[in-house]
Image 1 (tube, rainbow, N blue to C red):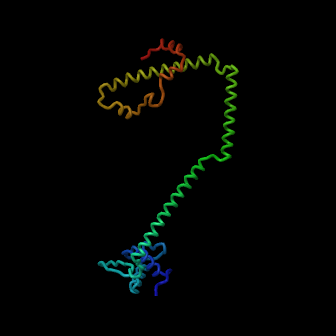
Image 2: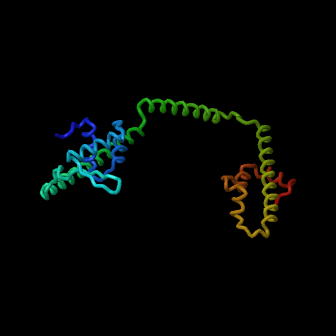
Image 3: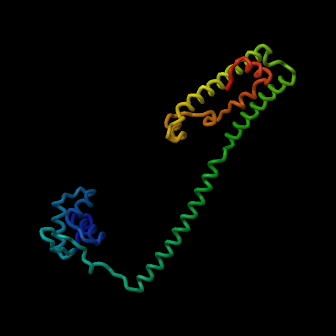
Length: 231
């Protein structure tokens, strides 16, 4: 009489038959920890199943290896195997079709999620209307001929900017002189040396002395240059 499926012998027998491979008592005990079975109880169940002829075993020295009884399995014949292969192939095709359908649905969901909701569209519209109104008010102010920057303020800004640009130019000259002196006989690659020191040139950070110079009134800049030594 086969053991009940919820008994220790039934649980062990079900596991051995399910695995259908050589197992020792430790393998079985480790796998059945979820049932809170002790190794001694598992060992006893294995021995009982062997005595009852429900599983077989082989001895290798002091260790016993337990095996499922192959005559307890329904082994399909060639025709049944072919039928199972056909069914498996059909299921694989259905699985691929389902995966494709799921992928298409997920892609559609991503597109829908990327679209704005009606509430978001209304909020964005209100924000854009406010920005347009603000810009129209600024444009109207400019068209009316209102002076936004006083002449004296503009002069101070231009002079300050010219001074900073000349300081920039002088610093570039000083750096170049020092750099040339330091690296004149340096056998090291200059680009690697620059990166090693963490130096950054104007172009490395996206600025240009020439483009900034062009922002200043050329006549004023020329006057400033006549009093400053430039490289």
